Image (cartoon, rainbow, N blue to C red; front, side, top):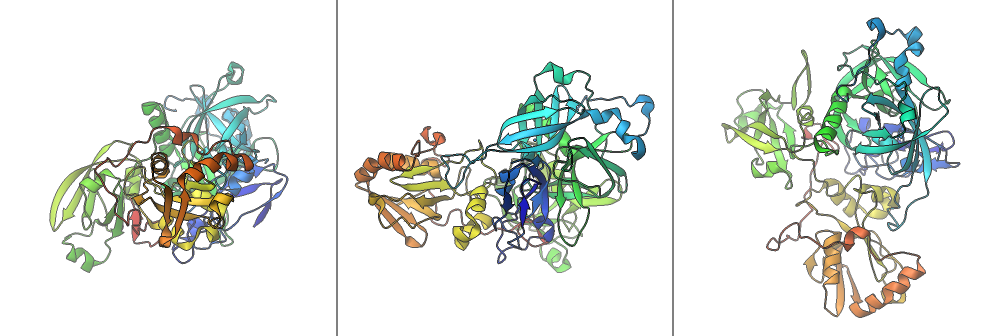
Length: 606
């Protein structure tokens, strides 16, 4: 669907699964973050990162921007953009409501706390994943943010993704102030900003964070959406509170569903209760012909986790995971076979090799408790007084490096084990650390790691079903593992016959299995053989004469205007993450897996 960029563009959060393999719920396929853009051209989303319905990836609204959203379709992980684009207590934060008066809808515009909401102007320069040695054309977007005290502001991560310049403007002011991005939480879609100018902070008062609301509580969303330049206020109620798919972060965290209007540019703006307390951050909506008025707010529990993480570590370290694939135990015969006496527990179907759980948990174990909280047979735990919520909610409350006690039943015997929680290691990343993808050019052959942004740019049709299957269904065997592909061949007489090769996984170099692109660069640099032999899927070979390849590289780089034959990260010494004595089996990185984002209601990732 084409959306005029001059109006606004919604970043499609693709669930990137082909229809053959996807059983992704329609819910994920239509989540979107809002982004208003100034780009003077219509933006048309391709089938990149398609979900079960390849033509309709999920979207996020609120702070992204023109082309940024355009490239933002992702697999089950959704992408987000929440700014109006033209192509952004802590604890101790306090704000005294005078006489503790309640703010009614009629006089909400007079509430002083509205002055804490600012407009964000961001200029983005995203990487070009197909041509990884360069950047794409810059574009701009607008979003919302709000003051939280201690000289900091909060907004959505997708509002300032790939930001080269961020500016903020207060309500009733005509001056824009340069802001700095202190931290970006990809999974939770939150970013922390600061402004050095003392002039900006004069007369400002931070917002108070409120508690998690109840169903049917009134909620007011404030921000700077499409349709005007001044602040906008919309009113609704809390419709649902549960673990929700975060489009930008490709994650599942606690979310608040509301029926108040959230439009492009609202992203990063606060949601208030009737006491004028901030109960969350607007960040995405659900778009479908079958539903109306479904918006989502990041609750203060997730915001507090992000701020606490930043305070503890001086940076954002992420939300941890347990690293196991689980199956519900609703069937009595299944529970009886596993010697589970009560109506509880979830079955461990697979354990991630890179997780600490791989050292203590086994396939066939039944998890019945997590830090003393009993886990139901549907994978839920008690939540507040009369509610239940997905088991992974408990995990999301922990921090990276925390040790938890997991109660399991193994072969009919109950026992407790200790597990260290760490962020999940993705074989095919949804976001590139550092922003710029790695690449290596050898005699015109362009190698780069497979990533979701690359799949989005190239379109699934050009990637191939076999490679897509690996991207969606494989687990990393070790930290640092990558799927390295031959992205394209820059035609030259030295690589005649290979010029039509593209998007094929390279498995071996001179008989050695490739662990990641840095390993490939190391193998080539240390090669003394006459020939460079690259082995691809289906036993396809590409052979170059080593001396001729080295001699041709400068000419090829000059002809195609490429500054360097490799990215800067590949100039560093190679460190073997596996150790010298560990070998890689032929089928490494090809383990079929399934999770909530991929499929069946009976399966979920913790």
